[in-house]
Length: 185
Image 1 (cartoon, helix red, strand yellow):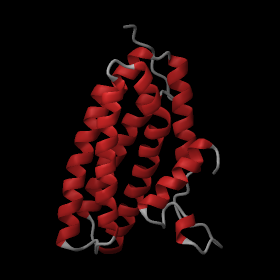
Image 2 (cartoon, one colour; image 1 turned 120 degrees about the vertical axis):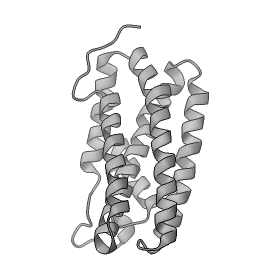
Image 3 (cartoon, one colour; image 1 turned 90 degrees about the horizontal axis):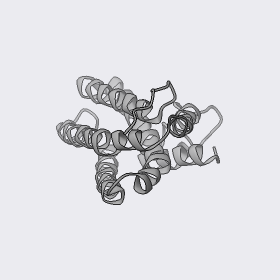
């Protein structure tokens, strides 16, 4: 069980860093109101879309093959991710300043943070033990590229909101992030 030396592109370090950003964005969204809350919520959704897609396309397939009981670990994470997507779709239809939005977002935050903790302990740490530094770096570079090319705001001249990662519904954000990762972006 040799520990590798972590590098700036290590996929585990990168995704754990995103977990911290997600935690901060939940806090920012919950403490804001009006336009500021809406803006924070869009950024939270964007980061969740990029993050979950990177996990689904880059990390989960490798974890299934490389870690003991990997299929069961990944299946549980995918179930949690599906539940989060369902709640996000509900949140998109609510007024960001409503009590229902605040209640649902608070429950989602708790579920997402619990999910992140399980990923770090049950999937990321074990993957870090099983893969070489080079493999982890390669996966990290792919995840970083996906984040870098996923648009953060609507592009001028693009009329369809769905074509813009930050402007469209969460499902469209997932599609754009997936396209970025698999090279269609």
